[in-house]
Amino acid sequence: MNLQKLKATVYEIAAVSTIKQLKTKYEVLKSLDMRRKASWEQALAIVQQHQTEFTSWLENPPDEYKELFAEIDRVAGNYDNELAILKQKQQAMMSIADDIKALAEEIQDEGDRLKYEARQSQQADWN
Picture 1 (spheres, rainbow, N blue to C red):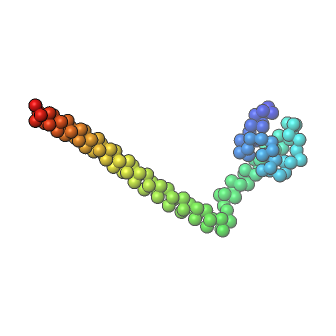
Picture 2 (cartoon, rainbow, N blue to C red):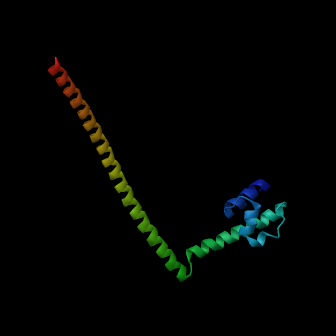
Picture 3 (cartoon, rainbow, N blue to C red):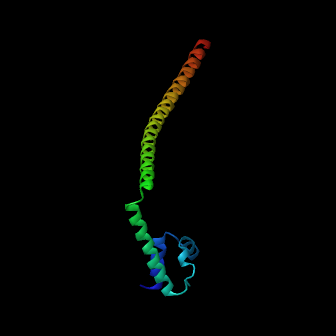
C-alpha cells in the first residue's frame, strides 16, 4: 500500500483528518514520526486494534452500560415517536393555514366584488 493510501486508511478508520487529531485521539502514537511510512504502518495496526477492541466491547458491554444503552434506545425511540407526531401536526397546521389563506382570498374577492357592485348601484342611482 502506498503512503497516501495508508494515510487515508488510517484517517478513515480513526475518523480524523490531521496528524494532530490522530495523536490526540491515540496517545500511543505521540512518539511516532509520521514522516515515515513505517510509523503510518504502526499507526494503522494500532488504530485497527483499537477499532476491533471497541467493536468487541460494543457487542458485549458491561451490565451498567447495557442498562444505559437500553435507556438511550428507549429515549431515542420516544423522541422519534414524538417527532413523528409533531411532523403530522405540523402538516395538519400547514394544511389548515393553506385553507385559511384560500378562504381569506375568496372573502377578499367577494368583498371587492361587493364594493364594485355597490359603486355600480350608487352610480346608477346618481344617473
